[in-house]
Amino acid sequence: AMVTCGDLGAELPIEEVPLLQEDIIIRYQSMQTPVIVATNMLESMINHPTPRRAEVSDIAIAVRQGADAIMLSGETAHGNDTLYHFQIKEEASLEKVMKDDCNCFPLKAVNVMHTVALRNESSVQSDVAHPSQLSSHESHMGEMFAFHATTTSNTLNTPIIVFTRTGSMAILLSHYRPYTTIFAFTNEARIKQRLVLYHGVMPIYMQFSNDAEETFSRALKLLLSKGHLHEGQHVTLVQSGAQPIWREESTHHIQVRKVHG
Image 1 (cartoon, helix red, strand yellow):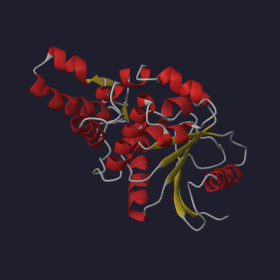
Image 2: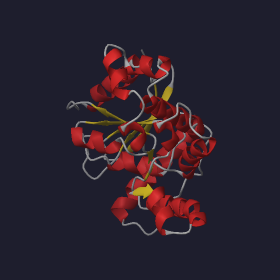
Image 3: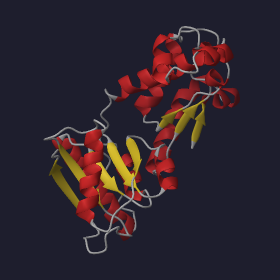
């Protein structure tokens, strides 16, 4: 779902827009559907290198209300000296460009949005929702495991690692808003692309082997090598779903493991 603040402001009284934005986000969260807040959130940066304070507040409010994603449009579609910038900086990395360049406002807009969003996400700790009592038995089982995995992760301050073919468990975990990152391993490229939108989820493509333990070990080593985990850290590992990846294993389980180098 997408909340386009400009369209809402054009059709409805302007004082209603913040309330409607929050209401839409809450409604779609309850349906486990990702919500994008959009429409020129840093519009002033099309022509100026720094944002207005009100624009920074718009980003912070969307993040703190629980939006899964925030989007730039005109800010990155055009801007001062963009073509010239890429001609002279074609050999530079994106990270270096965003840090050093003073003329490319589209990249500055991306950097501003990223920085403001991360800072506000780090200060938000939402109350963990409880599983719906109206769910069917099958979906309720998944919700219960996602809820308890989130509770375990929040209590022990551990990142969550989930293995999924369909993305359903990663989506459920995202719904409960754990305080730490959800590392979602999948062997389906389209599922990896889909999970990018969900709050707190870092999808990672990896082929699963026939042996569950070997797959778990490879996943931990990959996260360790990329600096997402450190040796001696604990993680909450989740495997649940109607279509188990490893038939000989239990369909549902939650484990807390210590990372070894």
